[in-house]
Amino acid sequence: MPMARRLPKRGFISLSRQYKTEVRLGDLNDLPVDAIDMLVLKQAGLVPQIARSVKVILAGEITRAIQVSGLQVTKGARSAIESAGGGIAAVEV
Image 1 (cartoon, rainbow, N blue to C red):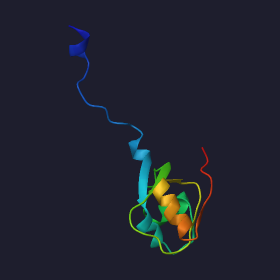
Image 2 (image 1 turned 90 degrees about the vertical axis):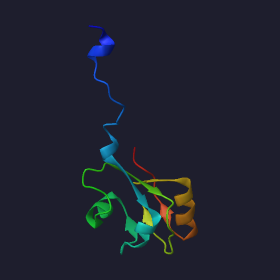
Image 3 (image 1 turned 180 degrees about the horizontal axis):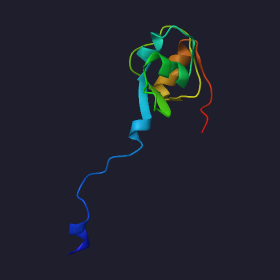
Image 4 (image 1 turned 90 degrees about the horizontal axis):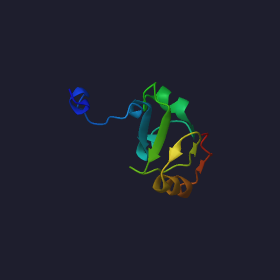
């Protein structure tokens, strides 16, 4: 039997997608703490416990100064956080 017929036919699904997640800026605005990292997001229930990397995206608005550390941040979210008076620490790779 030819190799093309022996192999399973299915699309590509990344096995690492369960470990990556996104958080909206509006959700960060609702948190009661000012220093936000992955542990705070897991305790608040915004990301699953098995998440290994989190990206902050520009959705919603932020009205207070927060300090983000250890998270990936999009360009739009970065400018929104910095314009609100917050700061972003370097992501550990």
